[in-house]
Image 1 (cartoon, one colour):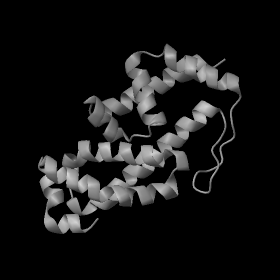
Image 2 (cartoon, one colour):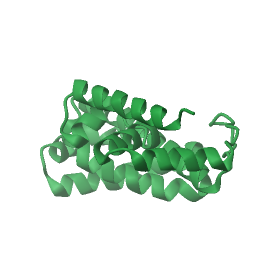
Image 3 (cartoon, one colour):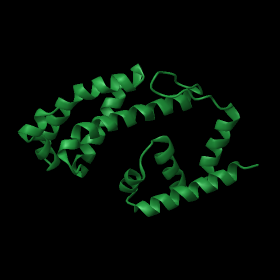
Image 4 (cartoon, helix red, strand yellow):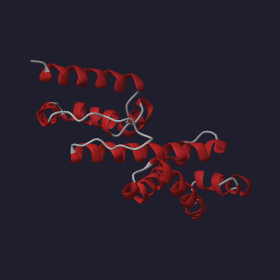
Length: 171
């Protein structure tokens, strides 16, 4: 992916040139796919790459240092792979075991039900912030960007949401 930095496509894409953005995404796709093959369950590779390319296209303007593009895009793929693994684990009720993710013991079905009911009982803005942080795996800064909140507001809202969820779940 380094020729992108030399020929200016990356800078043009960040500046809003859609043709350059298409070239950057097309050029990045194969490298991101190879990276995803090591971090994703085989059925999730293409989904992770697609979602990552969408995220790259949306957030490229926020990238401060163009030289970090490769590592930044790889982190997006890895985060997407982890999000898909968590989603599979929640849907199947079984842990996904591979050499990358740690083995997680499954919780009893009633715990999952209790947590789902606790989340449903939360006000929408608290539920949303818990899902973005704990299910999607977004950072506080990313959540703030997505919800147009300050870092402090995200932390405060997340803390309040977790307190309410704990109160609901406590005996």
